[in-house]
Image (cartoon, rainbow, N blue to C red; front, top):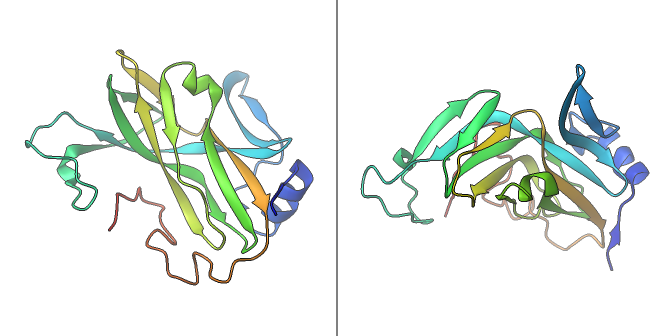
Length: 189
């Protein structure tokens, strides 16, 4: 049986190293400027996007997208405060925060509604018990126009569920994405 963790429970776990760095309140303004919110909320934590991106490029090498054999030439590396994702394309990025998920916690990460209302779809896989690292995040631009993503601002909301500790955690089985980052991790087989 799972229970959704409340703000005070998330804060306790974060103080123990589950989220680094940890913002203990929901931030909506920085230096007098509005930002896409991040930090602790009532039943979750809105994580930020770092300033490193891999932007999927149009097919310059007649490559085929193959999750078993990723062609890194299909990505353009970009570092900066504002990333522009081309229409009908996507970018990979990573979370600003590093996570160290306890053995009895499952984390589900969902896109923020502010981005969804602009045609931006955020995809992140669940954080399994025992997983540790930076989240690699995919942001799809489903709109016919270029779209901006702002580094160091909110990108997705994490929900934390407590359950029984599994017999084998992600750490125990040496999951292929364990300890990923701080660089953006492409698909592995």
